[in-house]
Amino acid sequence: MSINFEDYQELLDPLSLALRESLRSAWPEAAKVFSARGLDNYIKGAAALHSLGKGDSLVATWIDHAPLVAHEIGEDAVPDLVHTALGLASKTSGTVIELVLSTAPTAANRLGDEALFGAYLQFINTLLSQAPRGVRPMLENLELLFSQLTLGGLRRWALWGAHAHRTDYPEQANYFSLQSKESLAMLQKERKGTLFVDVQRRINMYLRALWARDFFMKPTSGDFETREGYRPYIEGYFLHLPDAYDDYDAGGTKLPGLEMYRAAAVHSAAHLVYTREPISAEALNPWQMAVISVIEDARVETLAVRKFPGLKHLWAQLHTITPEQCVTAGDYLNRLARALLDDSYADPDPWIAQGRVLFSEAALRLDSNQTSWDIGVQLAHEFMARRIPFNPRSDVLTAPYRDDNRYFWEFEEFDFEAAAAGYEAPKQVRRQVSLMEFANVVDVETAGDDAEEIWVLGTELFPYEDMGKSFNEMEGKEPVSQPYHYAEWDYQIQLERPAWATVVEKRPQSG
Image (cartoon, rainbow, N blue to C red; front, side):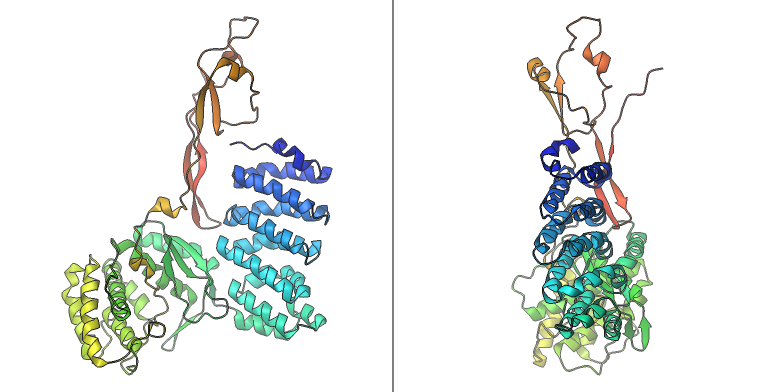
C-alpha cells in the first residue's frame, strides 16, 4: 500500500510550517527504510511529540533520527522509542528527551539488536529515576561509552555512580561527564576486551568460508549484574553470542576475544550443520542428559574437525581442566569433554578411558546423534556407582565457548525462510472492476508500479469526444510484470534483509 505525505494532513496541520517542510524533505528517505506501517508510526510519532508542547526542536530531532534507528535495527524499534520519549515527558526536560532521540541511532548501531535496544531504553528510564542529573552528561558521552562498554557494563557503570553520588549533585555531574577519577576507574573496570559489534562481520565471513552458507547471529547481554555462567545458545535459528568477550587465560596463554568468538560461533554453527533430528529427553534424568550433552558436543566437533582439522587446536586450547580436579561430577564431565577432543590429553581415570573407547568405536556412526544417546546413557550408568552427587546448577561445562545445548533438546530444523523472521513479501492485487466503479474513483497519481492494489477495466475506454484513441493509448502505461522481491545484504547490521529490493520487468521502447 502506498502512503502519501498528504494523507496525514489532519496530523500535519498543527505542526509549524518549518516542521512540515522538514518532514516533507525527510519523507523520500524515510520511505526507503519504513514500510507503510512504519511510515504511519513515524508521522504519528511526530504528531505525538508535538502535542507535548516542548518545542519544535524535539519534533525536528525525531524527524531526522527515527529513520536512522529503523535503518540500523529495523522499524519495530521505532514505536518503543517514541513511547519512551512520551513517558519521559513528565520526568525531565525537552532537552534531555531530545538527547535521547538524537543518540538513539548511536545506541542502535552499537547494540545491533532490537531486544537490546529495548533494554537500553528501559535502562534510561531507570537511570532517570535514580540520577536525573546524570542522564544528560551521560548521553553527551554515549558514543565514547559504547565504544568501550557493553549494555551490561554501561548499566553497572551508571548505577554505581548513581548510588555513590545520590545526593552530591556536583559530583554526580562530574561522574557522568567522565570528569572524575572514580568514573574513569569504573569505566576501566567494566571495559571488555572485544565487543561483538566490532567483530560480527569478521565472524560472519569466517563461518561462511567454512560452510558456504549464512548463519544468523545476535548479541545478547545476559544478566546485567554478573557475567558468571553466561554462555552462548541457539534459539529461533539464531546463534546468540555474548555482546563481549574478555581475553581468556588458557593456562598462562592469553587468547584474544576474537579467538573466543571464533570458537563459540563455530561450535554453535556445527550443531546447526550436523544436527538432523532431536535427541529425545524422555525417561532421562538430569545426570544422563548432562553426559549425553558432552558426547553430543564431541560428536559435532569431531565431524567439524574431520573437515577442518585446524578447529581442533582452536577448541582444545580452551579446555584447561586437569586430572587433579576430581571432586565433583562437574569435574569428571569437563575431563571427559577434554579427553574426547584432545588426543594429547592424558587422563588415568578408567571412566574417562571407557568414554574414549566407546567414542572411538562409534567413529563410523557419528552422523547420527543416536550415537550420543547410546554412549551417554551407558557412561551415566557406569558413573553412578561412584556415589558422587550431581548438581545441574553447579556441575556445568567450564570451556567458555560451548553453548548450553538447548538446541538439540528442543530441536527445530534450520530454515532460512523462518530465520528471516517469517517475513512475507508484499503481494500485489490486480482487481477487475466495472466501468462505473472505475470511472467514479480518482486515480492515485503518486502510486507506483508496486502499489498494493491495481484496478483493471476489462475493455478499452474511449473519451466522450471520439479521437480514435482510447484513454489507455493516450495516457496509459506499458504493461509491466508483477514485482519480484529479492533479499539484499545489509552490511550495517550484518544480516540479509528479506524482500528488500524490488524488480519489475517492462517492455523495451519500440524502435
